[in-house]
Every structure is written in C-alpha cells, then in structure tokens.
Length: 209
Ligand SMILES: [Zn+2]
Image (tube, rainbow, N blue to C red; front, side, top):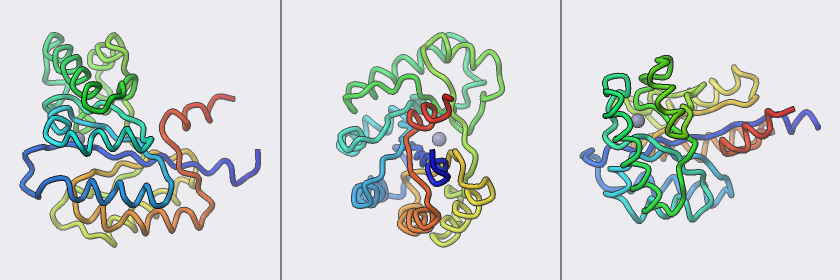
C-alpha cells in the first residue's frame, strides 16, 4: 500500500429535523449535487421522520450510491428512552428508512446528539437490534446560527489535518446553508492533500489488516 492510499476520510451527513423552518431540502440537494459532480460517495444518517418528509431526497441518497445509516425516528436522546421505547424507535424508523430509501440502514447508527454513545445499556440495545453507533472525529458546529461557509470549511479541513488525514470520520448536516456552501472547498482542499473519500463500510474494511 502506498503512503497516499492510507489517507482516508469518511464524510458523514446527518439528515434530520423535518420541521426545521429553514426550508425544504434545498441544501441537501445542493450537497448531493456537489458529491455527484465530484464522484464522491458519503454516508448519510437519516432520521426516519425526515425521510417521510423528504422521500425524493432520501431515495436520491441511496440511488446515487451513498451509504444509508440510521439516525432514529424522533431524534430524541437515546439514553432517555426506556428499553422498550428505544427498541420501538429503532425498529419503526428502520422500516421507514428502508421502505423509502430502498436500502437497509443496518448496521450503521448514529445516536442523536451523540447521546448514549458511552451508555452500555444503549449500546447493548442497539447491538441487539443489529446496529452499532458511529461517532465522529471532526465536526464544525455547522448547526450553529453564527456559523459561516468559510468557517465550516476551515474547521473541517484543519480538524482533518490535525489527525494526519488518516481514517477520519467527519460530521456534517444536510440542512445548514453554510455546509452546502463549504462542501466544494472541503473536497478541493482535502483532495489536494491526497485524501481518498470513503464510505464507513470502506473505512472499516480498510482497517482490517
Ligand atoms: Zn442529529
């Protein structure tokens, strides 16, 4: 394996909040356009209530070769749900995501807000349901109102650089305008460093010796 082959970044996008007043799926569609034009596949953690509100965009995510993951039904902190509540949330959402996307989200799960990622009860329940939680290494607070396109770009690129460009999981979201604006610059800057963009399944395969 050459040195350059070891530089891998998995871009992950949480698709969530169907009721958010920032408009329909314009930013998600712009993100998908950018990825398509750059021939890059990413991973999308989809909240099932977002999928039911944005079925066309959900279908497009899977059709364009992106990896589909599970981001719960109600986007509630998983540690606050009872065992039964957690099981119901995950199963119902799985059925909806799979029906709309046409792809199973298993085994990829991302806990809303990262809550529950270190809670053995939550992790065991997810495991029983066929999932494991995927946290992230680098984020840009792209959900904050004060964030800007250049701010997102610089935070992501600097964060990935700080980790040596090696097997870095990046968290972004589909709905903020700064994220859609930043994405071409992120792709360009990391491509110039020799980074290869991978989906989470490829990243895990790559880690097997
Ligand atoms: Zn989320």
